[in-house]
Image (cartoon, rainbow, N blue to C red; front, side, top):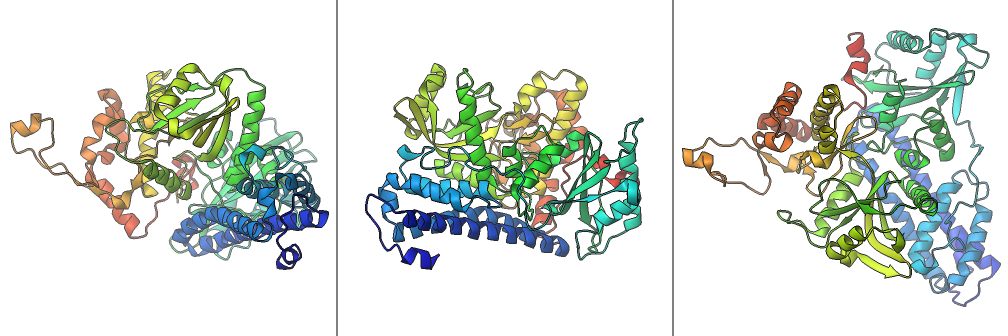
Length: 593
């Protein structure tokens, strides 16, 4: 790259030559390739971490991988500003730069991600007035279908020819994990039984019957996932095989997931990001779409750790939807947030959240504090219990699509984040999340006692899972939790979130007198990090029947001893097992150890 830029010098004229455009395009692509090379190195390191049970390093690597993208963009912008200062001053250069870039990424194996990296660089250099398809990739320029890497994306195994057990043996041993298996024969037998159980009564093997397996493991938390699809005629069935380790480091198959709901939860928006070594990411996305047609490419790119690509696709989807819909943005239903102003477009399954200029009492945190909390969640393991958030700057919304009540609320409480440019409202900084039914509204409208009971129990399990990941939600009112379409309870209000290890969990001291008991103020001192779990009950459930249901499974969450025990485990480096599937699905539960 240095040889390329040295030939250009400090070109500042209003025109650009073909060789100049190619040199700038090459500089941007070099920045992307440096980023993606490091991205794949992190995925390779995930295998080593799994083999060594180095779970702490997995968390560090995840954070470093996220930060790496912005680092590469910043480096590339600095090179452009130093060697091509005219690029920042002359928007007329960028159509030629974009054309040159398309030429050199024509057969690139990550061309869609390379386009997004180009956009990130160009948007840092250009004024937003020039964010259009002539200068950036507002629409994709290249197709990513049928890209072929240096090796196949998946391997195929043929049970009619080699037998199901032999195929399963080849699948389990085909990833060259250095750890030995705890009991390979037992695991194969259990996998075989599960696959046969999920076959229809009239099932028979057709000539096309095969098991296709992605060539890279999916690493997350303390598990490595083998991702497969079973083909038989025109039917495609998912098969997800989680591998885990025992205390001696031996690997075992924890379960086999084939139900659509179970598979969807493993790859949900609350569980990004996996570490996956991918040469052709679009091929992985297409494979996953074939077994989860209800997912979008936005979901899957984010789940694979390519959040910037997910953001690009989401923004395109939103603009397309706005063009083909007529409803207006409006204040989101439910209890109004004291920190965040939340609105939605009813026909689009997302909510838009921006930080208010002034927070309603008793909230005392600052804008910077809130942004820091969302950053914490971005870098942290969300264990399937915290919603993924897409963060944007300078989002344009047509003024004629904003409900008057919402516009009044925006002007009254978030004016500093707004700018009107022509026919658009520009929002300086915004968070976008998948829309969920708030837990309080879900319980108020639950159609059956079983639905209510299931949601209450999963609410408690969500708190346990978060605690196991060293997360204390802070404000644990039901309105801050949502229910997903797979009926899973997920936390989504982050302005009071903190680490368990930063909290001081205390018992409430006995009252000294009757006056203490009836007093509106506590009779005991409360430090800035003190938490009293015994006081949680009325915040969780005012309805005593609901509270009784909660206590059946989660009474210990109302005791300081449980929280202190969890804190001690985290400080000692003992990471809790968090399963993205029902415990009853585990082979150890179903069949016994």
